[in-house]
Image (cartoon, rainbow, N blue to C red; front, side):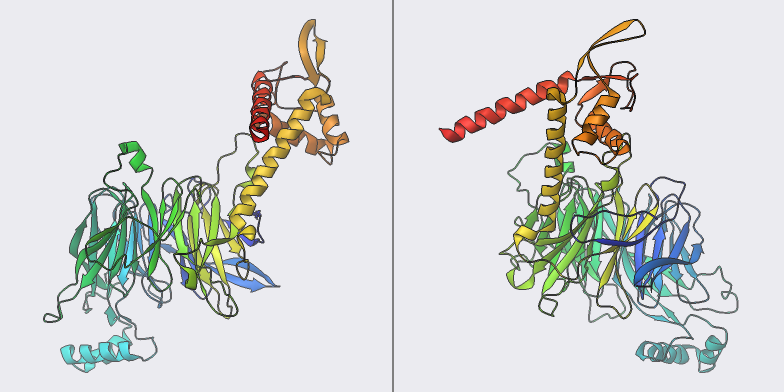
Amino acid sequence: SSSIDSIDSLVSSSSLDTHTNRADAVTSILALGEGKFLTASNHDRVIKMWRVEEKDNSETITFIRDFVGHNTGITCLAKVCAKGRFLSASKDRVIKLWDSDSERFLLATFDNMDRRKISSIAITESGDYVRPTDQVDMAMATAMTMKALKEGSGSVQKAARERQIIACSCEFASISGSHKEVKLWSMKHVDQNEQTLMEEENVAEVKLEQDLKHDNVVESITAACGKGMILTGDRMGTVRLWRSTKNVFLPGTARIWSCARTFTWRRKSELYSVDECMQFAITSLCFLQGNAMFVSGSKIGNLRVWSVDGSKTNGETVNKELICITGAHNMAVTTIRQGPRVEENGSNANLSFSSAADDGKVLSFAIPVAKIGSCNPSCFNVVNHGIANRYLADSDPIGVSSLECLSMPGSANDILLSGCANNGSINLLMPPDSPRKGTQNDALLLYRQAIEQESLTLYAIAEKMSKGGVESRNRKLQMRTYKNVFLGKDAVSYLVENGYAASRNDAIALGRVLATHLSLFECATKRGKLLEDDTKSFYRWTDDFLNGSKKEKLRKLKTDSDISM
């Protein structure tokens, strides 16, 4: 179990390792509801199901079951409906349909769904799903009536006796992350008979209905399920909104999708190189609550909030976003999700979203509904998954590859689930109950100020050590003279005696941080040796730090003189 540090009131109630022993461990997380969620890895063929439970005023993660059936690593997951259906895609271009709540887990397998592996799936219509064990509702009544009219009244009793799936349909879109097309699929139920009741037989079949064309490679996709809207983002920083129309005169025909609006902050008159443009690639998209706005995340780490309607002109190109959060992340944004829910004065008066990136940070923002377009969003929580390892020498960066917002039964608060790309951990992130008012309490600003203050403190310690704090002189060891060196033991003693470290072990760790991150000193007796608390290791201040310190003083003197003038 590993803990996660945060600058602003975050509690990491639980963390566990899963999909271990491989890099890029947890690459997909899918919330199913009622505390249950799925995890998958593009280096693992098994989907794992978990449940978050509250015990002794803390949340724990419990394993439920595996879903086995893929032959290669799993690239993405998508929830189809509230009855437990979900889709999974793997590297071998296969999509599988599952049921997490019934005796028959694997419902259908669809092969050769693209020319390359499928990177993302978005559900556009959840469709119908009727099982004999379901409670009687309008969907079941309609499906039973249609089956009786088509096959006779005896078919209904036979389906219940043999536990047949009575209805199974949905519509979804898929992208490969390597092509300019978005594929739109429809799924329909397959009539079951004596020969098709075997477990390996499909209960549904898919049909390619339409290809949506982009000018560049499509890297991200999301959909407002049941609302007839799809968002796609490409490699050159352009987002397109697609809307569907239905032929009322031919009710059995598929929906027709067309581009209603294009969003890009870059104007045609602005020139960029190809490499610069690819830094603007749209890596993640998410509709906000109510589907009137959406958020886009880019490869360079920026977040932008857009109005879906633009100026309400069909076919227009929107060049101005409502809100731009420049430099929200230092690396590519991997996931954006709605939530967690935040309340103001007892009502949901804020739109909220959370973003995760390869830099290891998860940021949660709230936007007052009444002030959209006239104010900046407030960041009410910051989590840096790699904050504990940021000063370790040769440590691998901890990126967040997946993020989900999980609603808990009987609770008004949501839980954020994060999956780390290289250590196989799932983390429960418990944000504050409500955002704090005032920009002075913005969690992202506080986080950056704390990191900056920490850097300044380290630099001040380094300057004091190098300017006479630790004695540096000529010393002899094994018939050899070392000029202007100091003992490792003296450096450790200085850090402890001046209150910079609580113990000598802490002082060793602090000294190594100063050496590796500020290039303060290097070992003169053995190349590359880290700081040791002994009298046989000699160290020397580096020219890079001493020269850099002089330049900083000259810059400060120049700034002070400019201010006085």
